[in-house]
Amino acid sequence: MALVAANVVAQSQKQPTSIDKADLAAAAIARGVVFLRGEVPKWRKEHPCYSCHNNGDATRALLVAGARGHDIGDALDDTLAFLKDPSRWDQNKAPGGLDDKALARVQFASALAVAERHGRAASTDLEKAAALLVADQQADGSWTLDSSQSLGSPATYGTIIATWSARTTLIASGKQPDDFSIVQADRWLRGLSPEHVLDASAVILGLELSSDVMAENLRRTCLSIVRTGQAPGGGWGPFVTAAPQVFDTAMAVLALSLLDTEPRLARSTYRPEELKDAIAKGKAYLIAQQRPDGSWPETTRPADQESYAQRISTTGWAMLALLN
Image (tube, rainbow, N blue to C red):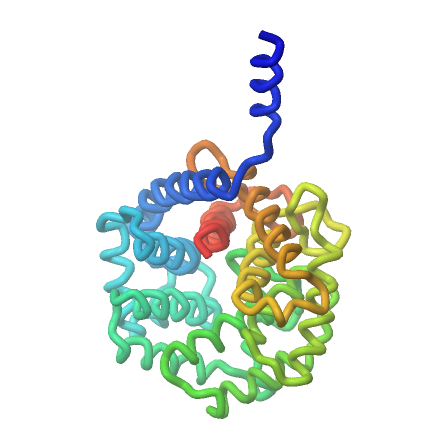
């Protein structure tokens, strides 16, 4: 009996296997899908406009989840009809509401790019969206959303995240690396000196898998920041010493997951097994933070505020990190 009891204790203390972790992630994604499947169409039914959070960030997550076999039903039918007609985007404003066309274009175009990739939109739709993005690109190559250079957040992005997102969409639309808009964006990204975890993660994503000297040096700096910033519990905050938050963790997981496809690009900071471990711990943190209703607590600046928009966007980002 003592031996049996000892075996039971040993089993209960055993660390989750990779299969266990995959099951936990799949369950978290499924709960998130149910939540967003209800929330995304609800916004337009209750408001006179489409939103960047519901019809942008959350829509991207549902599109990816749907492509991975999750049942998203008809939750995106109305949203996709809107996204596939970029001429409607600039007229999309609630009476007395915020009119941020540049941010809306970046977020709607990003969702449209995912829809096109998964056969839910035409390439001609995406080309029209790309033309709007090019018109918003600044002379320095960035997509500057405000002059304050404030820290990015799930629903408001910030300049670095917006530039990475817009560049990614332009590439998806068929623009080549030598296109002027891409060259300018790449030059701007390579000129950055990130100091914070969130910025470092966004720069890693923006560099993609480039292996030129400038990209390698900048990536090395960013990876050092990301590695230093991971908390013992697996999450990341916006700064190296900040408490972990869901959005910052999702961005770091997305950045490291990109490099996991080419681990040699991270070898300055992570051995391949260390890279996988950092990603796994980040995903475990995200799973642990999910609420019973399938959403994730909103990441806000400053922290611990209430915001429906940030909660929906945070949920979308967390799901994208787990789906990656």
